[in-house]
Image 1 (tube, rainbow, N blue to C red):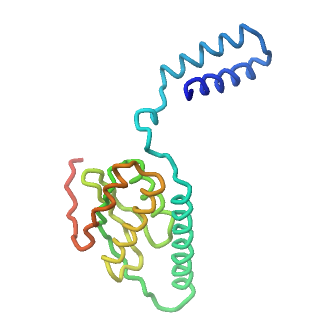
Image 2 (tube, rainbow, N blue to C red):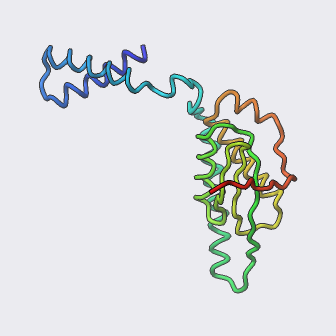
Image 3 (cartoon, one colour):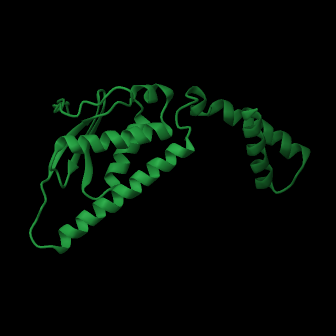
Length: 183
């Protein structure tokens, strides 16, 4: 049914682009649509559960992101307008439980949105994200915040395997060493 719906959608676009409803346009639209769907299959068909949003979890994730943006913007504002600096910057390695590159990329992008945090390096094997934190009082607290964001993101968009991996506690106390890469 999903395949037929896509053919119908693409065929209707084909007919609209030609500007006339005729048997030849409809048949050629079905042929071109079928060819396109064979040559460029939907990648979600191979991974049916990845990327499927769960509305309540998405709302929780959005609320968390907005709250973190407000808090971090208030901190940066206070840092700018007051005398003296309270900045204690540092880089923290945060081990992730997810294995999905899509979720890891999402986490890195959300962390880069927030003033005061910036991803420095992302590894996928093992899944570790190194973040620069502007106000680093406690590395364990920074890792806990990233683990919370990861949990919300996986519950919103993750695969069933990633959701099952959330049961494992993240290692918040272990400092990770960067692997040397050849350049």
